[in-house]
Image (tube, rainbow, N blue to C red; front, side):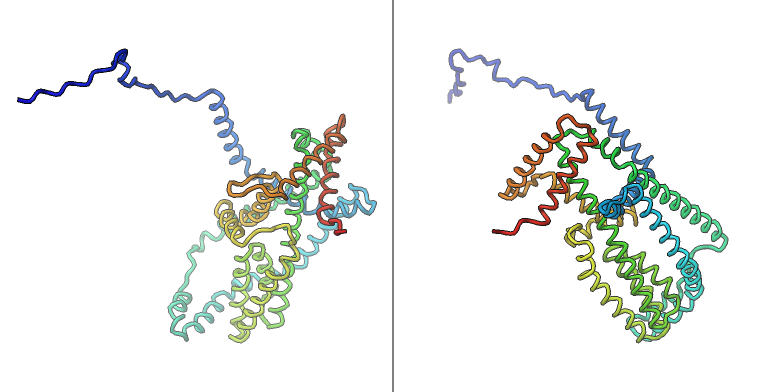
Length: 412
């Protein structure tokens, strides 16, 4: 009979009670500071939601101000007082807008009404042409049987709702323009208040960011105005030469649609081609090819020369920004998507943010050393001065640096 194996004995001085794991208690606690920060975040989110129209007015005012600032600075450089320059500029813009609206709005409204009245005839003619081809026959049947779902008795309510919406947009637009006017007049005081809230060690960086932001926004808005006017003029001349009716209304639609990169090209071409189909396939093909050629010329030549280096965005970033902006805020979000994306990239560059996948290069080290020298100069020149004068000195240093970057000394 086998004997049971003896249990191993503990070494001398070993306490068996210590071998058993002691139970651990895990406690989760939230500090008062964390609760306070969470409450602040919730309150800030609620305020942003409630005050969103006011925030949009402020953003549009900033866009208007940054767009017109270079013109005011140009007048100041020619010994025109700032207040007088602002008055001249706003008066000119106001008179120009009134003149353009007076000359175009009645014609556009009349031609748009004529287009809506002729829409069934245009749609029927297009369906008849498409029905002659086997591949497009199903689409022709769908186009011929298309019916609009808006009941007649709701047209009045719909028109009233749209008129209220247009009145609201016009009121917000005027508020943004007057706010931009006041901000431009009171520029020095507002800038001094902003710099008073920021530590002086960051003033140089803040001035560079503000200058770059002015460049990005100004270039974007001015570029949009130029490209929209050019495509509107081209569409009007093309359709008028081809004998297409309602050329003014279609040209205005093309100019408005052109504010959306890539998407606007399709939106501007389709109505013009459909309207040209009423004059035969040859006219439609001529309009299509001419519009495609102009869109290619705009994307290859006009946009790089008009925007310059202000919007250095890859095509993938442009598409992604447009999708995000359009999803979050609709058409307005799509309009603001590109300057916002360019601003984010500029902030990453100006703040010297170290991205996880990058390593600091020799050029980055030189830039940081240059930043340190400028900050030392700024601290020396602003010792004992107020925030408004310090802000002017910071802007002067940043402007000088930009000039040096744009006009480097030629190699010896």
